[in-house]
Length: 216
Image (cartoon, rainbow, N blue to C red; front, side):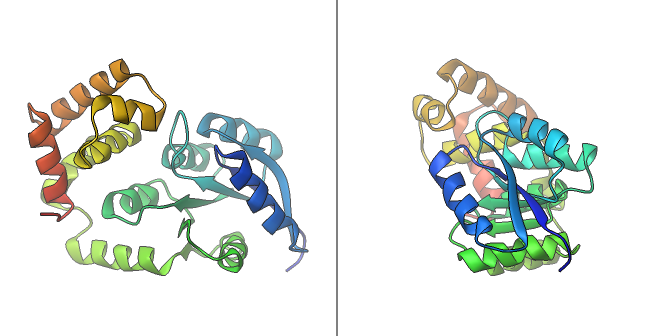
């Protein structure tokens, strides 16, 4: 491969960025040109550094990695974006594809697989963990959230995150702590979720969420 692939790392944990940077710098054809710890910062850094590939965690403070990916693709469409996530469920994958992500890898991926993914997306290919490919195939069979699931598409990334944590039984205070926002903000987000889903209670919102995701 001719030239060097310029990489921007985006994660809100410095130790993880250091690990990724160490992995990338060991490759003769990869160069880490910068780092960012939030979605907002990633947009500014990408604008100034013009990397070839951005490796971005989905969960970030402020705007999510998926939202940052969407904005990057709108303003700097030549940049390739690989999203890293612990989640392989329908909704996250669906949103990543809507945001035009070039890759979606689970965080348990081996180092050599991530390096290979960087090279693949740089060449114009797509890169997905095997589990994500299975989810994409299942999405195609299901008609890509046809019908009832479409109401979840009305939720913003933060609203979806809050609803997902609600479905895990977390209280407003616990959700606020997990997402680094205030309980008052959580209340406002939940109110928006009710309005968009057409429900009037926490139980109804969670039941709808789990039903669309195919969970009992």
